[in-house]
Each structure stands twice: as C-alpha cells, then as structure tokens.
Image (cartoon, rainbow, N blue to C red):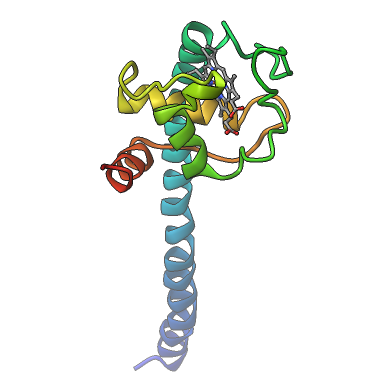
Length: 144
Ligand code: HEC
C-alpha cells in the first residue's frame, strides 16, 4: 500500500476529532440562546400587558412616573419591590385599611403577573419577571 496515502488518511483523524468536538461545544450555547430569547419574549409580553393594566387600574392613585402622589407611595425605588412574592401578595390582597385595594377579585393571574412585572421593571426598578406560576403559588400559599 502507498505509505503516504495511509499517512494522509490517519492525519485526517485528529482533524475529524477536533471538528466533532467543535460541533459538540458549539451546540449547547445555541440551545441556551434559544431559552434566553424565549424568556425575553415572555418578559416583553408580560411587561407590555402590565403597562396597560397599570394605566387602567393603578394610575388613579399611583404616579405614572413612579413617584409619590401623596395618595399612594412611590413605586420607583420602593424598598420592597425586589421581594417578588410580597409584591404579588400586596397586589392580590391589597392593604384596604391603608387605601390599597385588593386586585385579586378584579384581575386574572396573567394581569397580576403582568402588572407586577411592569412595576418591578419600570423607572428605577429592575427586579425581573413575575410569571403566572408565581401568582398561582402565592395564591395557593395564602389560601385560608
Ligand atoms: C385607590 C388607590 C390605589 C389604587 C387604585 C392602587 N393603589 Fe397601590 N397603593 C395605594 C396606597 C394608599 C398604598 C400604600 C398602602 C400602605 O401604606 O401600605 C399602595 C401601595 C402599593 C404597593 C406597595 C405595597 C407595600 O406594602 O409596600 C404596591 C406594590 C402597589 N400599591 C401596587 C399597586 C398596583 C400594581 C395597582 C394597580 C393594579 C395599585 N397599586 C392600585 C393606593 C392604590
């Protein structure tokens, strides 16, 4: 057999290994990227709907720019805004004796998640998404 042919063929093996390795290494980040994109889409949907809910159900008391109105406290930079479940609870059950109505009876789980996502990520706030599962969990945990 031609020796140089054998040498050329075996010389291709490391190259193949490197190529396969490169494909394997490259594939997981591609999948992770898709997850990130899905999360972004979800966030954007909740945030956009939350802006609508805030405009119809909250701005009668809360400032559209997140400031203190006198009737209701500033939501921008609110010290509890990072506490996701606490914020969901306040929206669901309110604090009626202090003037914050309960929105659990008026809004569905998506709308609660959406407005929570909106206020937690508007103005000076950047605390991440609140999803429907979070609202359902808080409801279940607070069921009498
Ligand atoms: C009728 C007036 C009114 C409306 C409408 C209203 N709020 Fe409030 N909200 C208040 C008042 C007053 C407080 C302060 C209550 C307190 O001192 O605990 C408050 C407090 C809050 C807090 C802070 C809770 C805390 O304990 O730190 C959040 C969050 C909040 N509101 C979100 C919302 C959202 C979201 C909506 C719309 C879905 C909304 N509010 C609609 C009056 C209102």
